[in-house]
Image (cartoon, rainbow over all chains, first blue to last red; front, side, top):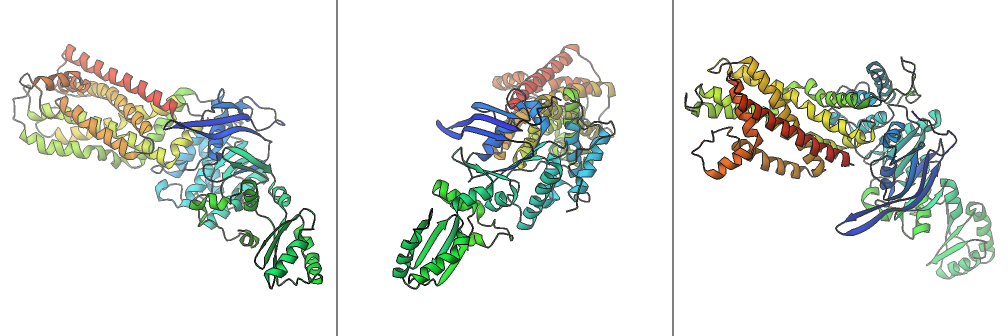
Length: 344
Length: 271
């Protein structure tokens, strides 16, 4: 195996582009993507369905040939050195890695053999992974009889069979119930923290990107529109201070006064005023006192930190939830923070 | 979930963490044994492709007039056709498994694994020989106690020829599955539309003779299965007419070559 420079990027793309032609119409799925991912990062590609996340992932995993531009994965070109790329990455796709008519254990072993392990090593590695993912007692059954959560764990186990330095997960928690989703996120987090595996995942779940990823790459219409840590993306936007008053007149006066805060964006509707401002939670108490002194007594006060959905809304003018109605309806896990509700 | 050592790169017995590149033959073997594992775990599954041929055997054989077809008993004439039919059914169905894997996702996982594209096709195609052997054995066990005379050397030679044919048909079936992608109905429509004309034109159930209409004889002459079935009949009957047998082997080899070429092309383009 050729080894890549360990300090260099694990993923490096330059002007990576993919266009599809369907029914004589050209669709630009990915437009000139420049991306560097360093070893040990945990990156989430966040965006609505059809944004180009999966197409990007499929180019990085050699499933699709780029229309133009270049991509190197673990030091290997995704077009010229496909086999080396495939040896170096783990991939958990949107579907199931294990065929439904096969037994789980057989599939883990055959994947290990595909990566060149001896029969003994393959069996040993399979048992190790099946234990780690709590699948040992189910692995002798046909995959079709496993539950959705068990199948997903099996997918991840198969993706990790050769202990790859880089793991791709395409929509890993889609279709899982909240409890299984939290379990899966825990596994991914542990893999990242304990082993230092570089992880790239796509998701349209805000909570998942927020909770899991060190770095969030927001993709829309085939372009990267934001790329930073979740806290920084959010803090750039500022906290939302929602104020309620007894009358629209009082609210109007308050809105005028609040607009004097440096960097504040103020929306005023009826008897309510929304103030978005950096450090809003620290300013809120002072603002309420100030407004009361000026004659606008605050009836109701709510302060919420920004969510990634607010970030997406700010960047695109649309809510990610609205862009993605079909899939997010039943998606909110039990652990969602209380502040989410206020901003939605 | 348990606390885990799940992903610490393990050092294996041979002292390496990354094993060597397996190469085409090992890849092909891996794909073939993986395909056979469900058969191994559940041998009854090979009977699925046999239901129709066995029904035909039970219902048609008694209708065939004794002695009028090439000298032997009616069964002697009919059994090689039934074996060929079973083979054609099994090999043409086989792409359905791949359709399934395309729909559920495991095909995609194999495409991202280091297994070469060609091994993904060749390994699958070669595996077709195994159900063929099992099914032929079952048919022979059923018919040998009756008026059928078993000529083992001829049968074995015929099975080699049928094996080559089934590798070709299996490859074409996989190519059809790859072309159909996740549209299962498309696979079945094309498969069903093609299989029965091929079977009937080969004179599998009723002989095509000089009295048959001209267009039927032309269709039959253009059908490679015709030559394979003719050769199989001769071999099953314990005879070895060099011309007929050579033609059968050539037809089987041509189908194998065509199937592999088309199948490899489809698999290399699969994504």
